[in-house]
Length: 243
Image (cartoon, rainbow, N blue to C red; front, side):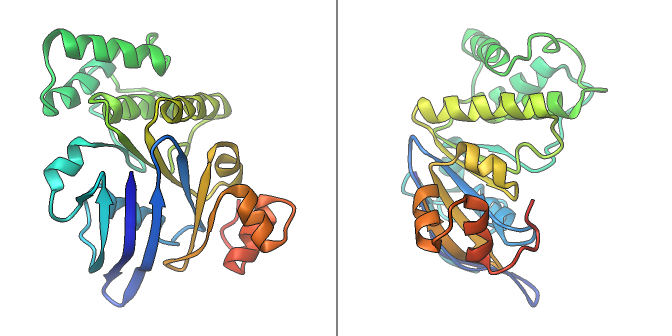
């Protein structure tokens, strides 16, 4: 479970987020939806301990991300926007390396890598060096690294960015499986179709604040709109950044 309580973060005179609060539950997919520059990635970076908030709190499984950093990092799997992989290593070696960083080894790690290769349809390239991989293949390897230690909470920053249609469909299926297995899944996006297809709960962020939140049905009801795209536009008061 993830709880965000009145988070604020400035970069110089720019307010990246200004009082963001929401929660993401286990066994549900929660989407951070908003235009580019709304504050989605900044919020996620605070949650995975890359940034320290200026004020407010963020808790993952009741652990404060600024106080219990190491404990938080063991309980999360993170797919960052544009995550790089080691091109001189094979896909398997990339995933094993991250497993070893989490204290895994031997048969346990080998079985886990094989399991992820099957889950993410990576068997065709699992033993190839990563240099020359397509964007979809790179994303699968990065996601496998994020999941290798079986984290309870999964944070994804615009996970389908740069993927083709088939790779996007495959990634959506994996995210749905994570939810079905009881994981807390939180991902950011500015793509309406992606959020509508996946999310149980949506947090709409605009100009660094939460403009609206709730289930897709509740957001449509509260904005008196028949479809989610119109509800989003009404919530943020602008069509800028909508895809």
